[in-house]
Image (cartoon, rainbow, N blue to C red; front, side):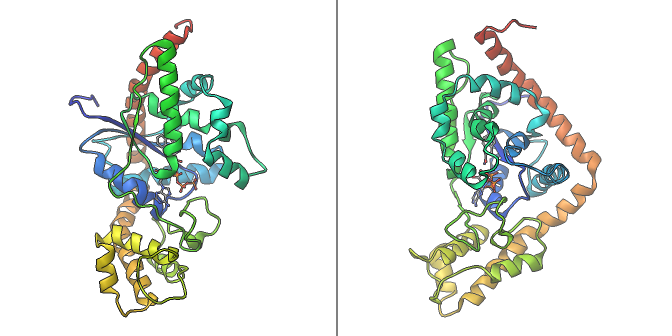
Length: 334
Ligand code: ATP
Ligand code: LTN
């Protein structure tokens, strides 16, 4: 694939640390699909990032393959985008090491994701968890990326990637493009159905709080029916109604209705009716994706062809930047 037209380069990634959730879909994946025509997109399954938390080898491999098939099922088009598996392109780990030497201990210590994850996994605060942002900076900077679509939770990492790029450019002259965050128009942040003050997260132990894209329809309906709400019985978007607000956001992104329309539609109706409607809308949204996924996951040869070709293209683009960096730093060239 050649970058024939002068489209802006976009890079984004997602960790394969668990099954993909409705939060990932509405907050990230849906936007990626929509960006494919207007941008030159690199999308990556960040499996190197995923091992900052202990993974069961068999499940980990399966999660990555499933995520690959699922993303294709959601509409990532290998003819339009370069959709690859991060560990297939060794330049990511190589540049990450180099960038580690241009990233300060103090900067990494301030990352809120590191603080949160080291509290959560206190028995395994490994060096990779700490230097996670330098690998993410490498992902982005290798492709001379101009825009990075990420959710609000990743903005701090992106800011650090910008600082690293600036610092390197300042020392060695212009080497990296300094990337801008790309905050999508509908930046839905989906919360847990059980603890609506926390974001829906694929590594959450409470699976009832989390809708997975591949959950069967009955499971999806059950999870929505059990969603935590409040003691009022009015479908209304308001402060203090985290559970209902979250269900309204989901319903709004899925159906395209505004909060006012939703409030009008459910005036005088109880939470039960509303939860059923939200559940049904999600089932309807996911049903074609699940259908397509079943076909794709059965076709291992096709999947392998797609990720191998994408890795080859990604290698070609990333190597140019890595070579430039190695030359500037002063390594003896091969
Ligand atoms: P983990 O539990 O392993 O931290 P996660 O489910 O929080 O994973 P990430 O891999 O960190 O997901 O995020 C992938 C992308 O999905 C990011 O762009 C992130 O902003 C987006 N995302 C994750 N969770 C949500 C959510 N609940 N609502 C909206 N967007 C989300
Ligand atoms: N850290 C991100 C996933 C990720 C990413 C990236 C996002 C890895 N590399 C590069 C944007 C650009 C996350 O946890 N959501």
